[in-house]
Image 1: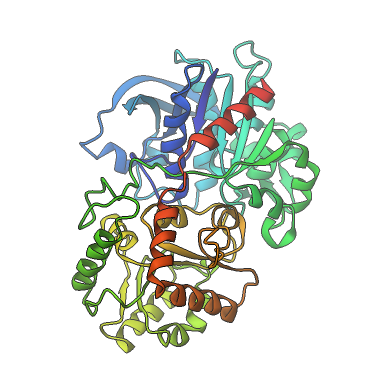
Image 2 (image 1 turned 90 degrees about the vertical axis):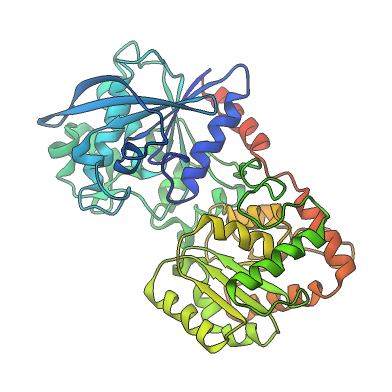
Length: 474
């Protein structure tokens, strides 16, 4: 079975969020199955092109029609950990700083979607499945239906759509259909939703199978609160919708091998984890005291991550006698809030308003409690990484957080973290308070740290479920 995994980003080449991790780790795990061959296609961004560490070679070039224009497509290849990557090159669209946020993103990723299909005429790989991800590749099924499926080379191809975050849908004006996509009016209905064209909606309707990145999220997005307007379309297509909970790369996120942390440690080696805490306290200018519980957050500083809850009860959290460490960037109001916290609580709060993967590893290893009170969370990777490093999560019961962090029973020690249901600041505060109280019971705390570090959060189970999905539509 041949799988072409199409995404707008994939680590280690380019990563802005969880999709980059998935597009690196899932194909690697799938490739371990002797009956599966996976290749990945992403844009050839400026940052990849200018990075001398990547060994990239030219494969081919050709033109593709995008409505009235004939556009250049270059294809380069690279191999990383046994997986072949195709990099689609067009400097007009992709030789820019960053991946997203440009006025012509709709055109850029419409081009990318069509280039993926046209590329199959010029390479020695014939996929049975094209696995698309989010809105940036969501036009692949539409182009396949409108312009390619009559060709023998394409007639057998099936498509799987994975929704990583339904909030982002690829909305463009109605004129886009003929002016950019070059599609006739027969395709307008499938692309139109509301008063515009919607890339993601078209993929939901046309693809053969839809997956989400956690089981709970696959049910949540059928309701208006989570679906950002697409609940009706998802309910109509619910027969092809299923949830597969993400894993993480347990080789990369491994406290026994991570070169970024101060002291490597295995499950149960709580004293070595404590050494990381003391070193982190020193580096961040916090009081060096192993008995003070350290609460951490590593997150984008945006509202749906639950930061308005934290902002509301910051003083009450600090009154619990904790140290608080945050790493991340985002909305200015939250950046300023955490800077102000660090000013008000010197030696107790460390606000690191930056994206720093090395520091993130140190914080995962050195903190005791990881706070993730998201309003919505399709899957979430941070809670999985935190548990891998023996840091007990406090989460809201939503999406992948609900699937991966069952509530901890402090008597039987079943479960993996402290949870709250209602999106409410004082419900969150109560969960943090319970976690802090539990931290001081060192015998039970040590057992739970050991248990959560042994939790299998690898990609093995998820990859097996994806293979079943692929098999069901071939």
